Length: 507
Figure 1: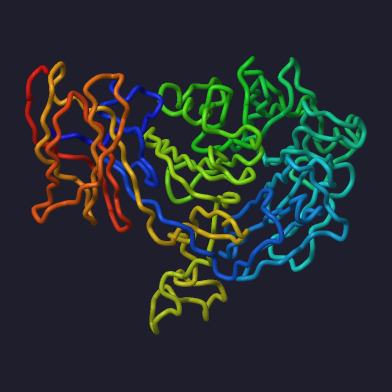
Figure 2: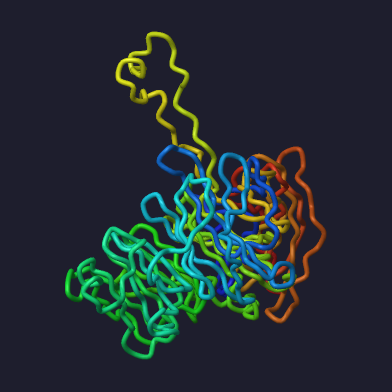
């Protein structure tokens, strides 16, 4: 009997989920099986922040150099929040002269517009920095609001859940900058604002606080606690038109929106969902959402972070689960949206870095003599050889428990797979003689739990090792078998198991 490792779906009862997995730990789904996950490795030149991260943005600029902007702050360590940049193998505090003060559950929201990075929080003026500049962050001039969420949509910078200089707290409203100029925020309703298409809009209905803003290039999505709106550019006088697409169904975990391929992932009251700018659908129901929500420590819901892996069709979700230390995220869920499959992990992280960039190398620079595409000396422009390559220069990263920026190029992690309850001969006992693991790269170990009734406790025996012929003698006779497979660091691909056995009666 061949058992292929199916999808990780811990919400499904193990007997129903015979072809699925109860655990798929420290691994990612891949076509036909699972692949390992590596641990952390510090980025070149990364030094520790003085307090835990409170939001970040990263990427590669027009020159091909990587940058990372990050906010830090911890009331127990450092009452003032700081803004940092890591660039050219150095981490530098580039906070403005005015201290930033954050509440214990507040964080910064970042957005890139052109060659500027913007940072916003609810308790300090909106900040801006020219990428590559040696200068510190500076206040955005004029009347930019304080905001919990910012995003670039089309040619505008948006702010949501705002404290407006004119109106005060407006948690259910958004505003946006002038067209093509995120540094201009005129008085809303004035002729100056109308001339540059700047505006502010409270959302209708009882949707509650704005929880996040996402961009679909020329359209946007605004997530409230109990509603979701699509934003369409219509030009003056309305400029942007909000359409309420969902009523009563909103975002449970703030900052959880991840935009990708004309879709938005987010975490709702009932778990993981996808919004296509028209409607939403659950991707976690009867699969993983109930397990996640039961494990989530909602006392620290502000510590949940979600981000898209720049190298893969994978969304990362880190969160403080059972056993966390002071709210530090200690669990990971991976969702591969191309495969529509989940897996999970146990890693202590202080925050995600969506694009842990390194400076790319040119294709074969310096060019060899006589290379036909090496025309620097003739035109003064970069040759084809000097253009930076992007492959491998962008990858997922995270902050360690010591607040140092890392990517995931460290040592491979040990994996763990647990099957559903396998019923080899429905209605009868089944005797397993041996198991051949279909795992490349390393010999694995397998432990077996035997159950004769559905009331039996799931108790695993000792781990058994692989013989020289690649099989594991088991000698187990029961109605139901659950298998736990330990995959030592160095395994490459896990596909399934070949189980040799036979029906042994109806005892």
